[in-house]
Amino acid sequence: MSNQDAVTSPDASGLASRHLRTAVASAERVVIKAGSSSLTTPDGRIDYERVNALVDVVARVMSEGRQVVLVSSGAIASGIGPLGLSKRPRDLATAQAAASVGQGVLVGAYASRFASHDYTVGQVLLTSDDIGRRIHYRNAQRTLDRLLELGIIPIVNENDTVATEEIRFGDNDRLAALVAHLVRAQALVLLSDVDALYDGPPSNPGSKPVSDVFTPAQVQEYAVGGIGSHVGSGGMRTKVQAAQLATDAGIPVVLTAATKAADVLFTAGAAQGDAQVVGTLFHPSGRRRPSRLLWLEHGSETQGQITLDEGAVRALTKRKASLLPAGIIGVSGTFEVGDPIELVGADGAVIGRGIVSFDSSELPALMGRSTKDLAAELGAGYEREVVHRDDLVITGP
View 1 (cartoon, rainbow, N blue to C red):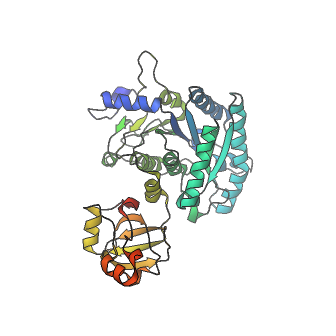
View 2: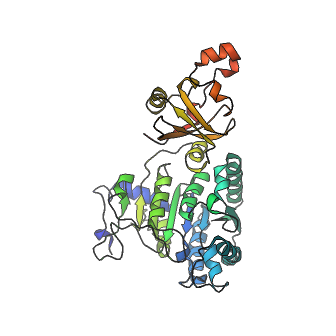
View 3: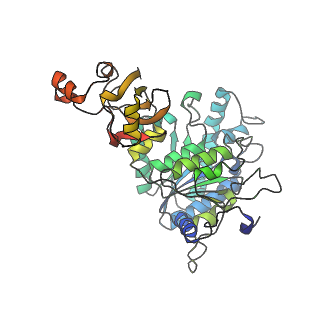
């Protein structure tokens, strides 16, 4: 289907859209995510031609002095063939066994092909625990930054061998968006077996590709499927959610087929200086924020809840104030100073997340009291915010 047939906004073909596509095509640090269906054959075996084609594109990006983090699915899928299975296993133990076998096969294929371009890869396996705990998050960030500084190509995947249902990312699309935050990437490219987001099921003759998504609300107009291929775990819905997660933090995202990766990652030519209109471009809907706040909103695992009265909810959401003990009417869970916690209204609706400056055992005695009274009774150390506004993200109304 031609680009002229694509669903677009009147502004999509304008200067801003072209400039953003060119920015993606020339990003100095880019995260590329390749799905299982882009790397394996229908029977689950690794497709070396597809892997090699992807590696050749990434190597070309590297040759321009740019940095790439490759988030690669395919560990479980790569283990399907060697284990003699006919499809992706549904039980956790067999899936982990397939990942154990397949991860070695997959990384070996990457390492061999990248070596032919004189590049070295580094394997980075993550679980949501590595993103959800602040100290682990910082360690992962430092490791990835150092690999990139050394000219190494990090190959990131969820650690399917040890990940349980409770600590899974759920899919590598979300992992890719979080990694883009982690390494402060200038662009995220999601590669799939579908060439774009469509305004309806791609199998329907009347469905058209969407060239640009400007706001999250725009996506609600389209029928987005949630079922992945039989060798993968994701679907179009997870890709759209990942794109929204990244764009909310100011990172542009392009979704397209793996076969069109080069069209997205390079400009059309030095003379024109413009990138081609390929796939779906998700425009940033938010501003870049400190990594601490990105972790807090999207990666952290909250340890408890603090319930606020109506005045505190208004102060936090409307005036961007800090949370003081006077506005607290309830505490649940067990947490310590520095832990991420959820902030909820009296109706139970979540309004945000924050880094708490008191232990959960202390707060019940402080609820509803002014900081002035607490300082007079308990000392100057108690004249402080429960959650400072710099350690707070508002996620609800």
